Length: 381
Ligand SMILES: Cc1cc2nc3c(=O)[nH]c(=O)nc-3n(C[C@H](O)[C@H](O)[C@H](O)COP(=O)(O)O)c2cc1C
Image (cartoon, rainbow, N blue to C red; front, side, top):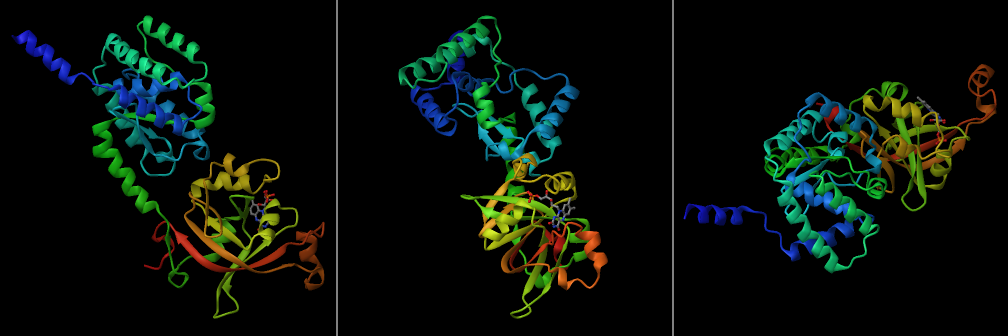
């Protein structure tokens, strides 16, 4: 009697995955990741079934590996999501390193949740996973979707499973197309701890419009010392950005309209975008972006995709382009542009010091149409 009860109980608690669930999962995956191969489907289903691929014992090594991945990965390459469920049942969730890079959660929070997720679980046997996988493969066969390298992947998976192993990496095609950088978190840990944190930070992180009359800041430090990113362009025809530290803020024309003045040398690639567009933006970045700003101020966008290389996320909005990572964005409508005239200089020394090649800056006056800020740093208390 007891045996029958135990068998019934194990049947009830065993993961029941219907062919229809499998089909709709595969279809959704193919829509989201058209480059995926069978091994990528395997990986997602496996993570759903078993979580992280193995127990984790060496905390230090795992932490170092996470640090390295945070340091070397690029937000611009990553998928836009912060988290997505694994496999068919979603018992585990992939939490993207993007959430750390965009300051939604700390590295420590993800690391700790990952360690607990990996170690709390008693791994099911390879035998039971094999049974599960067989059913998934049968359904995929019936779907006749023509996955690339299907037979090759199938054999690889079979040979790994026959050796009593089950872990597999994403295919190179998947890595190249989607740059997966995530950690697997058990669903209840994710739902109770990480999801609320990510969602809260997301709302707090959204930039709010602020009124220039209520601002406080030191314009000399903001431009001269902290620097800004001057950007222009649009999604269809492209955009560019460069670091600036020369400029002014104040009132001009209209009703003492809030305005900025920036100065761009003729050689800058960004100038072609500023000349072409009606709007340009100025982004104030956190101190931690100093090295990216030095790079954006020394290499030309003509020669490389420096925005992507600097790991910045383009936001095309408000008639222009700015960066999701900015602390403050000043959106300006171009009102006036004119090259500085040699005849206007009072002292030859200024020319000799700044323009030995007579490549005078063009001066642009922009009317400030909107200011977005992430927090109250620039507002009077
Ligand atoms: C701190 C700093 C401040 C800069 N300020 C200006 C500036 O005000 N005007 C300017 O024309 N160039 C300035 N530059 C130089 C440009 O940012 C640099 O030439 C950049 O590589 C141009 O990129 P682009 O060709 O992609 O437009 C500055 C560079 C740095 C590092």
